[in-house]
Length: 115
Image (cartoon, rainbow, N blue to C red; front, side):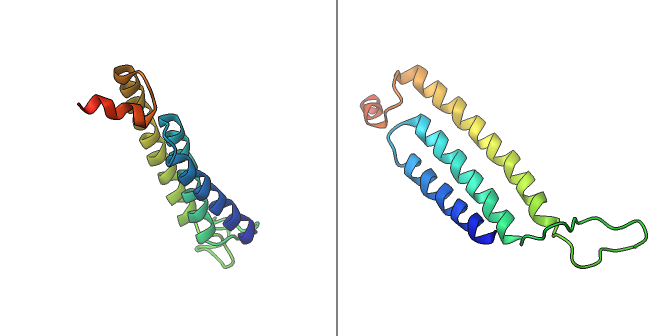
């Protein structure tokens, strides 16, 4: 399962970087989304995978008994999802405003506005 996650993380990072290097703002947004999903999967895989063992304390116990899944990676992923959503929302608003001013999303065409 870890190998499958590693392949998925590599694919998401490669696709995200490829999309960011394009000349369109829409592809930049898609690339940012792909990289954020890849980072979330990387955090999830780095925390270790434990099947069927939740991070819950049984009713008759006072502390967690091994084996149990680590609760830190899901908490970090939840935080990362919120932060990446905020960054994507800000980027979409920034791109929309830029498109309204310039009239194109091509980065080469936008260089002419610097004159």
